[in-house]
Length: 153
Image (cartoon, rainbow, N blue to C red; front, top):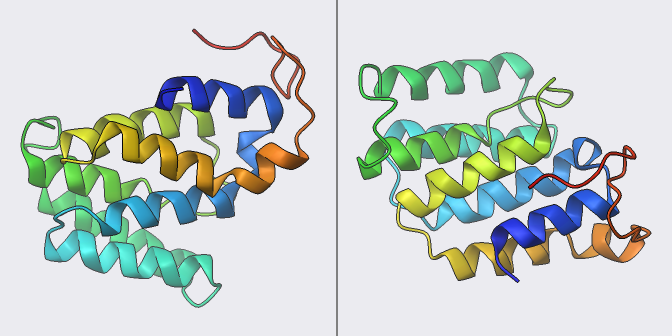
């Protein structure tokens, strides 16, 4: 099972938008294995503290703004490993309740992380490990996502 298959299975079993802590732990763990710039490392540290309720939404926002500023003008070039790793780290800087689609965020994260040098097989294993509890407690309903929608393809 590859990353996308695992992500689609997760979407069928759990409401990913309610799995902030598991997503944050996964993203932070993967990012720690990437070569990060100083700004991205600092942002990741703030994100880890935020996860533990030891940093505020404002601190997280400042870290996010600093990361974006560090790649300004080249932020779309994920062939540049610094840009790709910074974009991956940015995925960890979203606050709780972020009105984004978790599935799409995790899908984009995979593109940034692999462009930054992460091994796709290692990403899949890390995703499965990060969501092991969610996968165990989720009631599998083949072909139906937690919101009742068909799986994305």
